[in-house]
Image (cartoon, rainbow, N blue to C red):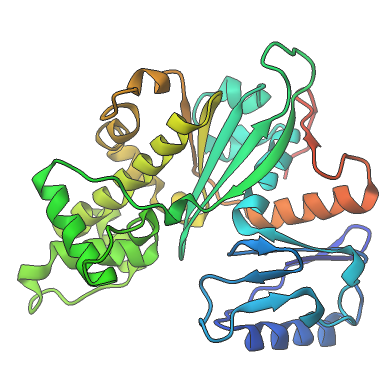
Length: 344
């Protein structure tokens, strides 16, 4: 969460948590340190928002439901407390950074489009403990030349089942993933491949025949080996990990008319950018090729975050300021394409 108890003062609390009991406990700790009540608060949360509650998908299943009334009233004003899906918040963070004219400082891609945020739709994907997906949707008519206006739509596309594949090597992998995760009842979701645990599963498959010599590694260790190219199995696992991320992006590109760009965001993307840049020519074929309607994708740009910026926190603060100040429509964010910006 981002808290702004008074003008120009923002606290950036960071703590590890696995259940709601621990989360509420940490909020009480934060209050004990700052002894201030936030005028308005936005929480960026990993899970679908249902009214005043959210189920945190990466928390302990026995204790992962957060209700607004669970939050300490000493810390927040419940009437001005807002729940955002984490990728919804990331989308607002991208819009906020675009409004400052700073997107080229954090993303690689078509700099002209990054600088102007034109009147198009954009998809956003971020791999972490899961796979977050969202849309930045232009509400202007395509012929409208006035300042673009956007709405944010959170998605759960990461939970869609991956499409079947005729490639026997990929097919074997999918069958293995299916057996490991769903006891062969379902094909894997994109999130089962495009996430931290997904990278570990990909590496597990690559090292089956070497289990005694090569113990299982965590996602960070696998990524490090892949980037440094000190482990061929780690490189192979990372290739599958990213090839399916690009396939997921392709699904959005095909199904959403006027989608002219895809943002790959998040800390993992920043960390893994050296690997992706080196293998980009091979990986991006999963987006631009291998589909009967691939000609629909030729004009679409993919923007890759390469410099660290907490877009979730930036988006949460941007959203809550817009709500509280009422300077912007509550559901529509305008992006100023000609705004001058100061240095960080």
